[in-house]
Structure formats: structure tokens, C-alpha cells
Image 1 (cartoon, protein in one colour):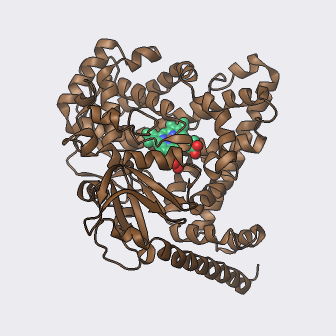
Image 2: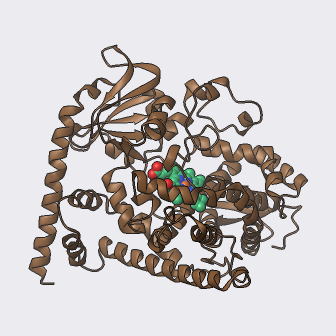
Length: 553
Ligand code: HEM
């Protein structure tokens, strides 16, 4: 395309998007004026309000302080002073995620980005009835029963991980980047468990092209925040052919092109894997069991369920294929970074690490054990729950009200002028941040030590305030996996993965802090670096072979 024409396309798209954003902001400012009475932190910039502080890489302390300092509903400022509510009140969250889920929708930017990245039919690209229809078929695929059958596969992969780490550990503890290994293991676990396809055999040093494409997604999307907002706004006013022409007009080497390349790779690899599965399924059971995961993986289960579903419920080929890269993307960093967080905490708390190792060794948990027996290991369970409670890795989710409504509260709040508020009128277009961290660490619910990591709190019964609050989380009174129709579909998968990886690693290795500081950074999924300014996601720990381990170093 002629370069001046390309430039004109880009300029028109950006101006159109920006104008649309501006008009929406003005409308929203008028309708949400009353929210300014709610307490919240001061702003340092009229243009970006508190958003820079909330979304910044070093926002960990800021996010933790919000509900502690201002209560369960906090008023933040968005672009040009538009109020954005940070909501951690359990009843309000119940209303947003369950009771009035149809009103509080994902932002248009979120839906549009997911449609581009995973395909228009992925769970995260659809709303309302379309989304419900897909979940109806997908929910049973993630049932405990299927997890039970997948467990030996998980152990098998984790034993390969153990050998890979053992071969890098000598007689003395050595520094090893555990984030890197947790990432590779998570990719292989969801590759085999999710797609029935090996994405990283955990021996050679490079991962498959599918894995590489997925790994470039998060940094590329983060670098494109403004572009994504403009692109989402233009969806309503510019036709698809025009927007495609704009993407093609971006010079190669830009983030837009990197994204396009990654998306194309993911799409073509998903189709290849899908077609191979289809052929095996058509040939019958003998061909299916010859595949990598012997047909026990999520996609094989889904394809079999789809084939026998009522015609009205059946998903089209594209509807199935569009879940594939979403599944890997959603499973990968969330679980591997949570596992890294557990290892970091165990290195910081050697007494808990010792006790956990004793529990695991006594149960023989490093060797394949039954699903229920694994779940009966109480300290292992407590360590996982407590880590997911205090350190939820996903804290940047929001919703936008599709119409005027009223948000009920568990406890009343008091506005800046001392007025009691038992509920909050919400105007159409208002943005609400889902305060998972605030709810998980609310002193009113969990007690005064709510911010401290204490796995032993799960060994006795939880305070009645926790059960009384009726927290709408899908897992264990926690908001970490969200709640309601759009909650995490893979939390059982993730729980089993975390437990097996910890059971095998903690039984065989010791983990100590390195001589350098490890910092956790806020992003779509929180990640560790060496020091505050470390550019690369990394978490070196000193790893040694446990003296009782039977594994050869
Ligand atoms: C510690 C690990 C994990 C955490 C903290 C986590 C968290 C979440 C959260 C908060 C959501 C809701 C997102 C939203 O409202 O927009 C979600 C959705 C989702 N998760 Fe997870 N997740 C984890 C692991 C997994 C795994 C292992 C899988 C798959 C095997 C998975 C698959 C999904 C999918 C497909 C969705 C979209 C559901 C929908 O829109 O209906 N997640 N996850």
C-alpha cells in the first residue's frame, strides 16, 4: 500500500478512536459525579488520575494499601478524572459477578483484544448467551473426574522436570532460575494436559514455536495498551476491512506486526493439532491412545463431548479451535508464577519448608499418588491456599456497567462528608475494578493478620466472618480465580498442577534465598525480577539436593 495512504489510514483511525473516547468520557463524567464523594487516594495527575499508580509495575504496595486505608469501596480517578471504583466488598462483588453479571460486562477493549488474539469465538471474546453456551459444554470437561485421569500424566512430566533440575544441581546448592523452570513445566503440562501435544519436552533448551508465540503475547500486548483502547473504540465506527488495512499499514518490526505474527502462528498450530486429533478420533480408540496424552487431554475430551452433544449445544470447529490458545495462555503464567511465589515463600520461611517436606516424604508424595490422597495432604493444601489468598497473581480485571443500577454493600461505608451509604448508585458506563486482593486480605473478613502469610490458618476452621461474608469466589472463599459464570474454568487443573510440582520438588530439593533481592511486579499476571529494575522476568533461588533424595544430581 502507498505509504502516504497508509499514514492517512492510521491517522483517521487514531483520530476517530480518540474522538469516540473523548465523547464517552464527557458523558461518563456527568453521570458519575456522585461517586466523587466516596473516599479514595489523592491524585497526582489530572490526565491519568490514579491509573498510573494502580497499573504501574511497582504498584504492589499501592494495590495492597487501597482497601486497608480506604475501606471496601475505594474511589480512584481514571482518565480526565472519571471516577473508577475499586470494589472489595464481598456482597458488592457477588452482585457484580453473579447476581447482576449481565449488567457488569468486560470492557470493550478486553473483548476486542481477546477476539484478535484468540479468535472471535474464544470464551474471553464473547459475552452473554454466546459465552454461556460455550461454558455449558466446557465446564464438565474440567471436572474432578477428568483431573483424576490426568494425574499420572502430570506426575510423569514433573518427574522429567525433577531430572532436568537435578542435572543442574551439584553437591553444593546452586543458583537456578526457578521462574524459568516453572514456566517451562507449566507450558508442557498444559500442552499435554490441555491439547494432548508436547510443547516443551523439558530436555532441550528451546520451546516449540507455539510456546514461543504465546510467550511473546504478554509483553507485546502490554506495550500496546493505548493502541488497544483506540482499536476497541473504532470497532463500533469503522468497518472490519478498514481496521485490517490499518493493521497491515503498520511497518514491520512494530508491536502490531509482532502480535499479528504470534496470532497467525498460534492459529495455524491450533488448527494442525485439531486436525490431527480429528483424524485420530475418526479412526477410533486405538489411534486415540497412541497420541501424546492418550486422549485424556482437555481438547480430546471436549471434541468427544461435542460429537455427542445435542445439535443445539454443539460447537462449530472454529468455536473449538478458538479455545485452544486461550487455554494455554490462561494456564501458563498464572500457574507458573503462583508456583514460583510458593517457592519464594518457602525459601523465606525455612521452617514451613521443612514441615512441608516432612509431610510430603511421610506420604511418599513424590511418587504417583491418588488424586484424593494428594488432596488430603493438609499442609500442602494450606500452603497453596494461603499463597493464592495473599498473593493473587491476577489483579487488573475490571467491569463496565451496561446500564444504570445500584450496588448493594455488606457493610455501609461513609463518604468524605461523613454521610452513611448502604448502597451505591452506579451509572451506565461506570468502570469498576475487581478488588480481589482487597477481598482476600480484608481484615474485617480474615482478621487483623489478614495481610500475613500464615498457612496454619487453614489447619483449623476458618473464622465465622469468612463464611458469613458469602464471598463469591469459585475456590475456597478466595477471589483469586474470580467467581460466577466467567470465573476461572481451570482452577482444579491449576490446583493439581501446583500440588504435584510442589510434592515432587520439595521432596527432592531445598530452596534458599539468593544473595540478591527478588521483587514482584504488577502486570496482567504478577511476575518476579531480580531487583526493582530487573528487565527480565526471573527468580533465581539457591537450589540444593535434599540429603534424603533418591534423585541423582
Ligand atoms: C493460579 C492459576 C490461575 C489463576 C489465578 C487464574 C485466574 C483466572 C481469573 C481471575 C479468571 C477470570 C478472568 C476474567 O474475569 O476476565 C480466569 C479465567 C480463565 N481461566 Fe484461569 N487462572 C489460573 C489458571 C488457569 C488454568 C490452569 C487454566 C486452564 C487449564 C485456566 C483457564 C482459564 C480460562 C479458559 C478462563 C476464561 C473463562 C471464561 O471467560 O469463561 N486458568 N482465570
